[in-house]
Length: 498
Image 1 (cartoon, rainbow, N blue to C red):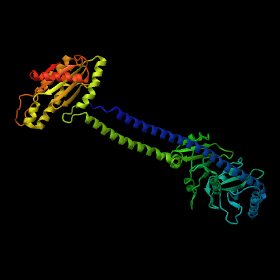
Image 2 (tube, helix red, strand yellow):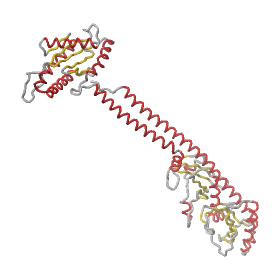
Image 3 (spheres, one colour):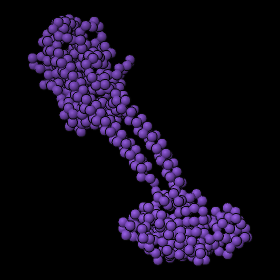
Image 4 (cartoon, rainbow, N blue to C red):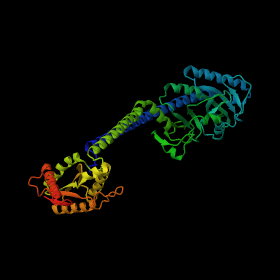
């Protein structure tokens, strides 16, 4: 029987699969290249933005240090110890005014003077009798306890005096004998710094933080402010990054993966070493936010790839069903509906191929022409249904004696069958024919208690390519048919080799 799939249809399926694979490969490669380029671009922007933040903060700290160094000499020992603190406020205001004529002091808040006990004794620009106690401030205790320290910075916090997020730059006030007299501190308004940064930074969703040597946050961007914000909320709502020992080793200005952040999510981070003020800087962008932004920027290709694959898949499914239908149609066109064997059309296709192969390799091809004896009487006496059952039983016997994959068995027409036996000599073909006769003779013909004949018999004509002078499809079939007729003339129920 011919049940193989046509090579052209198999090739169509293979080509469609290759196309889908190529589309996926090209699309994936394009997305990968786009992602790689996008990450490199973000890294460049983050490096630039991080450096911008660092330079801006350094610039403001340098200006603030100049202001403090301008003000500090004017706060004489007598003025600080005299007890008349009302005279200090004009000095602070005058210094602020004088400094503002030559410098931009937009980011500066208050200029504060703390006495040796940490009590605020003067504030620039504020007329108030309220003198808060700042003895617990880091910048005060740090300068008081470290005589050699020239200046210090404080962590980011909400100022009690203004209610704004600030950090402080402070210098110690000491007399000629290095006795501690107090602290001169400058508030730096980080909201004004952020507004300036928003105009010049390029990287979206970037989070940046400046850390002091002890790990405290001096400044962070963005601030994410809200009304009634406390110190702890200010830091937790921002991008607080506490770097461990493993992170401190990565101060190379290169982007790398990390799990920093309040939600321990995978992020891309960039670290810069400490600057002249002892501040180290870290910038971070969430890998998830980065991916979302990338998808938004590359929406066409991201949508086009699955849509294209879907369209090809739909086409593939359509071709698959069409191919299956065509295969079934081809098989049906070459199959006898009643017996399940190949039909005469298939035999006319297969016989020339087998003859050509037999001649090419010098191997015998045997042909058996099988004719059911007295088949017409079965149909006339008992109807076509009973005749069809006989045909099916004969086809079953033919398949039983023909067990090799290359053997071709078909129904020639009516009550006639043909077996093509490649690489089979005449004596082997005769043995197969006798086996078939015995198998058919054992068929039980009992049908509704009627016994039209004692047994069912067939007449078989046999020929081979070695016995045929010029073997071709016409001559082989003609010789096999003639041999079958001779078997009938000699009494039926036998095989004749011609």
